[in-house]
Image (cartoon, rainbow, N blue to C red; front, side, top):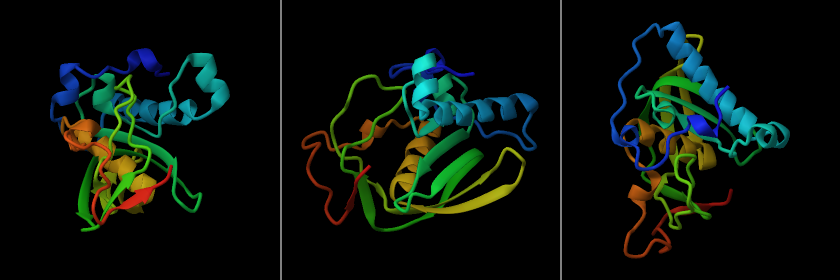
Length: 184
C-alpha cells in the first residue's frame, strides 16, 4: 500500500520529466503500480484509513509522483451531480477539449507540493480523454467540471508540468476572463 512516504516532493527531477508510454499489454508490475495509485486516492478519501496511515487526501495521482516515470494516472472524485468518476488509466491522452476555460475557485493543490500555492489555474472546461484501463479495455470519457480539471492536472504530471506553472505570476488571483469558476 502506498503512503505519503512514497510520494516524491516538488523539486525532485522525475516531476519535471516527460513520462514514457506504457507498452501494451502492460506488465504485471505496471498493473500493480497503476492499481496502487487508485488504491491510494480511494484510501486517502476515507477519513479512518487516511488517519491510520497518515495519508493526505487527494483526488488524483500520477505515476511520476511515486518516482515511476511512466504514463499512468488514477482519478477518484465526484462530478457536479455527485456521480463518482473513478479511473486508473495507462497512456491517457486528451483527444479533444472545449474552447471555454474553467478553474477551481479555491485553486489547485498537489500531493507532491507541501505548501499552498494561491492562484487560479486555467484549464479547459470540458475534455475527452482516451486511455487503457487495468483490464486492457480502450476507454474514452467525456469530462467537465472538477473531474476534467483533475484529469488535466494528472496528465500534466506525465509531461513534467506542475499546476503552478499555469498560474499568472504577476496577478495569481486575477479572475480568468470568460472562464467558469468551479467550486470544490
